[in-house]
Length: 140
Image (cartoon, rainbow, N blue to C red; front, side, top):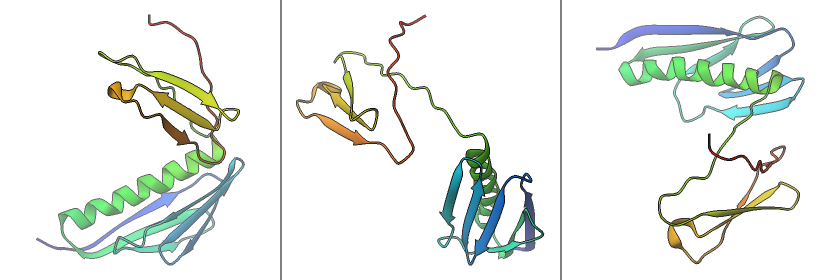
């Protein structure tokens, strides 16, 4: 069954500026700029007012209509990222092969050794603005 029209409006905080060009949304805030491309989804994105974005979908089925809410959630998460920022706390856990992680280049790279017993050293480059800190904290 097709729904004729589905629309949702995302309102952002005052300290956040938003631009919409085609299906590319750019969000600027105190912590930086984020840009996301939604060209793979067939929806209409329009800027309404100073800090609002309207997402429209015409004649969509169930999966198409789910994309409307997903895009709104992405835009809200972008606004949170440029105002508050995100912090992730991760732990390395293993069952049989003990994993060794080394931080190199002042927190810009991680070397993972003995992953699933491999002899190969995996090197992961962090994105710009991301730093890695090692905390020696035991379980519990």
